[in-house]
Amino acid sequence: KDVLLEIRDLQTHFLTDRGEVPAVDGVDLYIRKGEILGVVGESGCGKSVTSLSIMKLIPQPPGKIAGGSIRYKDEELTTAKEKRMKMLRGNEISMIFQEPMTSLNPLLTVGEQIGEAYRLHRKASRKHTRLYTIDMLNRVGIPRPEQIVDEYPHRLSGGMRQRVMIAIALCCEPELLIADEPTTALDVTIQAQILDLMKKLNRETGTAIMLITHDLGVVAEMCSRVAVMYAGKVVEEGPVKDIFRDPRHPYTKGLIRSIPRMDIEQKQLYSIPGNVPSPGSITQGCRFAPRCEHAMDKCHELMPELKLADYDHRSRCWLEQGDAEG
Ligand code: SF4
Ligand code: MG
Image (cartoon, protein in one colour):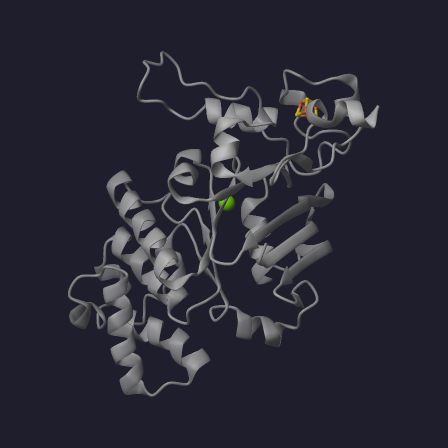
């Protein structure tokens, strides 16, 4: 299946005044070469912590990777040295965030920031770097790149800044781009443009994208596969079309039901009752049980495994696997 990155039973914990709590509590997921994988879930379910764990950018302390494995190609990242991670970051695995302004350096021009990333990994000459930078700006759809290359970030709109972030992230042709809610801070029209751009670049360059979002509409537009996270775990995972057509986990069903629809008049938008539990507050059984209308006694006692429900489609729910387990 040509796996590029595989996460198994990842545990990322944070030290809080309530003790050590698992923000990521046994995540299993993988991403194939060149694909766009969606990672969805409500805020606080561990999506961002998972992506920061891959990059080894968890603030340590209070955070730490407490267990499990992250394999990139043939390499274990959880035990990789910082020197090695520096080589990988930006070069093989890149990341973009929700708010580009906080990740851009206000004191450097757009060109200097793209060039810095490029020169660090490629040791290119200044002249070549400048030409390459202008070409990158062109590819991410920035108008008048010969002028913008010398501008400072604050002179650009939010959408243009996010394009610059994408140019920085992709300038070394990484194998994997992790995009954490990359369009959430932008207005709807710009959102659509940035998503189109990411899709186009994925097709052109073959860079795999792990797209983290709370928006299943975005997943439907962009992704071939999706992993649904809840309370620090993946609860369902599979091809997007299968998950929309035949969701297996009650949480996924609830998320799909809460997508606003244009074709029917809705008096009130559905939302899943209750809240995401705070990390570590439920230690036994299915983490979704307090909000699940199908919860059985067993659900409160034992955690179901993430198991094959159908070809290439896995779900973590006793409704699916109850009988086999007795
Ligand atoms: Fe609901 Fe039980 Fe399935 Fe959890 S395991 S989602 S509580 S039916
Ligand atoms: Mg987040």
